[in-house]
Length: 368
Ligand code: HC3
Image 1 (cartoon, rainbow, N blue to C red):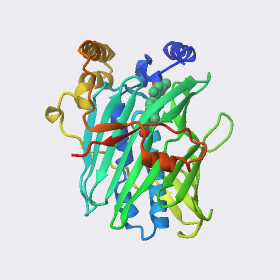
Image 2: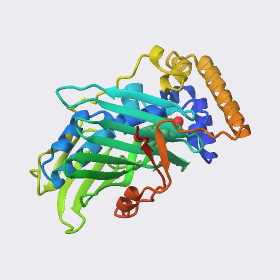
Image 3: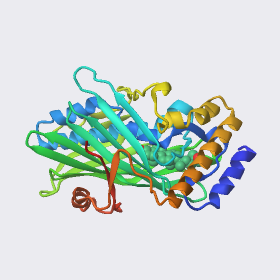
Image 4: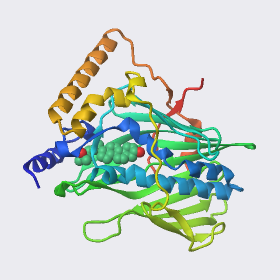
């Protein structure tokens, strides 16, 4: 381990609060802002069509669970694949936005993403993905509470996602809670994520998916393992049990709808589709890649002096803007989202997700 890494670990050990604000060694820095991360929810657009095509509430619930499992590979392993290890993302500024889309292909329709930094302290990103052809919208927000236990970082995710499926007979909702992560491999200078504990998907159609995660421990265990059980709320009947590796292959263990032993999801054969974003010249000043263009360039070209100089410039401008707003009693206005301190839809569905600490508020895309 390098001296820099050792110094970094010592500083994490004595740090309490928001890890995203910590100075990390240069080799751990990512040129990507956290406002871009909601795009991981949209990288399998074909699966949205399949949700809508499900012929019964059971089939649609199973299709939602499959889509959710499919997103995990991108969410939690993408930086390892593209940059060699988990990295520290850029900490978005208040009002920073990330906009993009996955184009229409073979009639599946266009999927759009709007993501906005709705809070800086604590950092919270709100997002909305939409596909009119599939009749699917995913809205949510994401924040983190981090702690260090001497060996790994524990990240409790604050927030949730809500998938809305527009059907001829009315809307169906699927509340998705977010799993807890650990960041291991720090002592080897090669951080990676494992997902632990449980997360849930509760549908308004009366099904609860309980997804248990385990990973590669210090001595034993298999990386990226999950077991998902979907039960009917009223009858308690299990309509699906699926298990395997969320970043690779999983199979159906038990189901009233799918053949036991069949592949549930094979992350190895379906490539993740990256979002398309406007060229820099066409982006406005608040768009993420525009805000961070010099910092990102500095990190990519290992010009850390440039990166750090421009990062300080951005942070100073933010500090001044904050002071000015306070002095003028002119609070920041959200651009694309409404903050909803008590969402009744969320309150109704979260009750079923036993054991999950509820987050109070939600963010919904402003309607035109
Ligand atoms: C913990 C994390 C920031 C949050 C990232 C989240 C939870 C954001 C929402 C996405 O849907 C999923 C996701 C994936 C990765 C999570 C990041 C991993 C590392 C980063 C820390 C703040 C960085 C600090 C740790 C270290 C040592 C790598 O620098």
